[in-house]
Image (cartoon, rainbow, N blue to C red; front, top):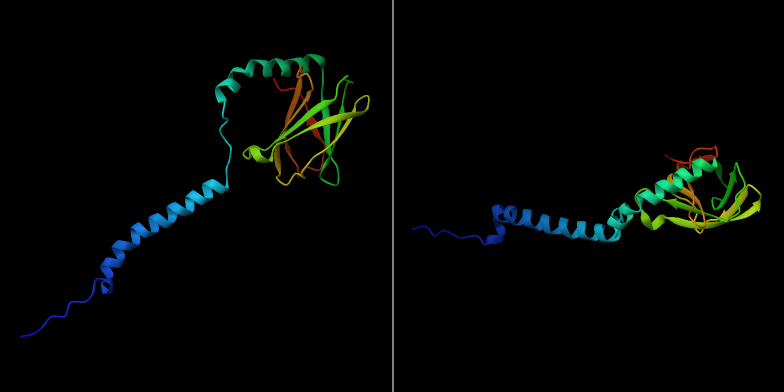
Length: 165
């Protein structure tokens, strides 16, 4: 009579193969959770319905800028933080410049530009622009008009700001 020796469960390859798939799924799920928490994209607005209703006022601001015949040029200083804007017509107000990243809301910056000459405005950014693409919006402080453009910083030329219709 032969006595069969039964090996312990941990010495069978099939058992480890069955354990492998759920273990990989759990580790992958934990990894994805931490990536989702650390990289908050902010792609969806909290109040998207209200923003959708305000589209008419934004269209009105664009048409007001076109009616005034406004346009301008935006220039970034050598330090990467100073902004200069030259308009084609003089306006009475300080200006508000919004630099919005297409996907990362946390990188957005808003600055008030002060008047240095009748058609020349300057301001300083809090943080240097590290990403290459930005949405730019220039407006007066009362929000009567606005100029918009998409900016690729690698371009050596000044950014042309025009009314969008």
